[in-house]
Length: 104
Length: 382
Image (cartoon, rainbow over all chains, first blue to last red):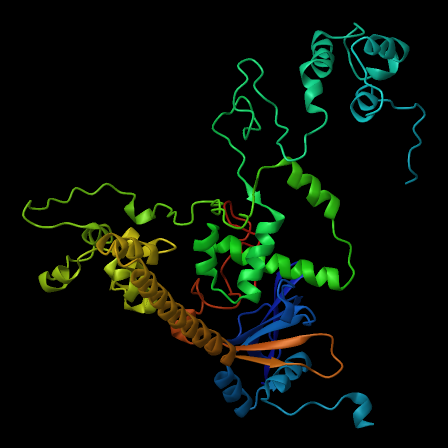
């Protein structure tokens, strides 16, 4: 059975929030995973504009990640889903996945 | 749905009376107005009479004693006064509630002075607070808001100046002292809210021969064992503890275990916003002749404490910054902030469902719709 590192959606309607989880590939999205290794808040946060240094700051998305567990699961062959691959590549844990137009 | 067209002209008999400044209406004009548009002016009323007693009284009041309140005098409050005994007009907006007084707000000059002192002359927030008698939190807020205003001016954004001007005309303000004048204090700066630990009544018998100070009382309230005799003898005044607590807040003792662990309640001399002022006053009383020396010592103390506090703040910021990785992907609209998290049995509980664990949990109902759960943001993230 394939292990996947993927996102599990929480939160209410129009208010998504994801746990980054390690789960069996064929288990349901809301099923209890093997392990939770992080969280991802897809709603961008705007830094307060009260300070001059923040005046032109861009909105940011928050990710919490247990790096050592992520490395371990990648080491034993867990496959990240595409969105998680994107996050892990930004965190520097995997190589960037080439986009379709780059492969062609 | 198409907007409904109103077939009848809706007129408010009150409106022309209250808004037209040129013609000064009197009680005499009211009956004529209401007789011509009697049907229109009270179309929702079930009372058959053209005027009710209360309405008549209202118009009578508006044309006699209420007429004074129509226009305000700049620089003075325009509050409803208690006309019967004519008292408390100055700062009491509600005549029936004499305990409510409207507080002063900062005048334009004073808030600009605060900005100049803090940002341009690089004085510490604490020093400015003591100098002008403005709370430290308010000073921080003023600096941020003036900064925001300056940026908006630089960007050419519209600023609601007429509104600000008329509000400042109508509410009491604290002026900035002219040269040679003494600055009027805006608010008490050393207030201390009652600590919840001091809520319960505790009957604690103490022998008369033993000295029992605020330090000991704090220890009793937090359930800590009393101080050793040698340590207690070194404390001549409760404010002696302030310096150590400011320079190293971690030096405050802890009592209790696990969830019940708490820091020992410090005496009020340590917890007030400006504990340095206690030391200054004591020093002044002890050496009334050496005014300059006392001032110098106070300045040195302040500088030392500011430095320690600044260092501590920088260390904390650096630690926070170190644990967060910023990623700015090319061509993306958003930045990403990766913070380190640890998901182990200690942080998530043995079943992974500990209420303090980060992330959302499985098999645990979210309590966000429970009564009493605060859903609105309670603080601003920097």
